[in-house]
Length: 575
Image 1 (spheres, rainbow, N blue to C red):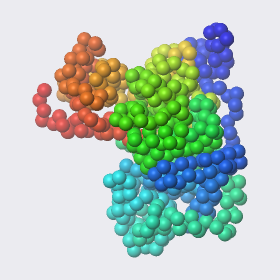
Image 2 (image 1 turned 45 degrees about the vertical axis):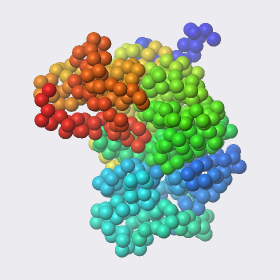
Image 3 (image 1 turned 90 degrees about the vertical axis):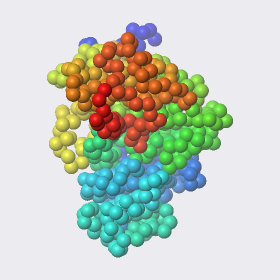
């Protein structure tokens, strides 16, 4: 096919802009699925019954699709026995464990709305999340790393110590009635998870199909809190239709096959794990491989080796940690070919290492947000390395995206503006928050808050966040531009740039830097590298060399926390 013929074909499918405007439509040659999560799992079981569905290396659990479905039904019936019904909200507060996967499908089986609670939450955040959605039940681990979940819940609801399981009445959690604890010896006031599974028989088991058949693909099925980098929690409400079709599109983009295993070291509480991991594997019929309860480079490398994984997901820092592991060379990674890297830009040096040293030649870059289920752009396995580091690919099927000026007009091709997304993938709204929903969605268009450009071939480049923009002496400065420049220094592994208050300019530029292992560089050297190479207004006034940065559980930098720490550190400083 000639370049002109290829461009015409892309234009006909909506993959490239028309009329010179930054507005693209995803292809619609394959129809959207009009189904629910229970039916989606049933179809996977029908097609792949005896194949391995899930492997949890930390616990040794290994289930076929048929075995997974039987566990799902046991828990679903057990939840019915606790008095939980369609539309009730049920939280899950746990790292990546077998029970998480079962709970995801079991709650959907009977129309419960699963509320993903961030494993890093503390007491006040848990209180806010459960009360915001009016959670009736909570499934939780006893603890994970330094987080003692049961003890934190007791602090919030001391009434748990003296109530019967299922009869909680807590002053600070007025809607919560039932607590289910993972593992042996449940705490006072809690059901044990295995005990709930054991209740899943009899009449409740026979009711499951009738309940599932009455569900609508457009019922809310999942609430995810999007505190992200803003620190302002909002409950993005997603439907069966949202997340199933997004998973199908992503599985097709990676060309996953039923014979292939997908390694999932990313957290299940986030869309990256539960949609791009669990549901992508369900769409393809492949195997979900969970290296551990949380990300560990050595555990992930061992899982990739032992389970012959063809795909692996992660944020750039996860891939860097695996490549930099001192025993990297001893692992056999010859089966890897693809996966999704998302959550932050991938430096070109890291992409070359992922392709050449890890052998992951078809790794894809994806972009999206929780509110869009999550992916709207993704690169192809055939895209060049240049496209995979400088863009987030082309638009996904059945999605529509445009870039707009501040006045709402669509920008010309290549001109920067805010990215807006429309289509099946846009959430229903923020739970019980009509004002913030209205601020974010208008005429079906979801405001991403991201600044982007779309080129003549339909590739999208994220250039920053409108909220990240800082104004120094009246000049707009976009941190992503400075971050990209800093990453060209061979000693710099990661960079985050943000604004801090300044009496003279209103705001000034601050950079946090992580160096590659064994490299030495001081703050003055960072500034010297910038001077003469970027505009003087963009040279960071403040530089901090750090070994780690505050991030979300998925590795997304939390600039608001860095800003808070810098403001505190700069108090009383005169420079």
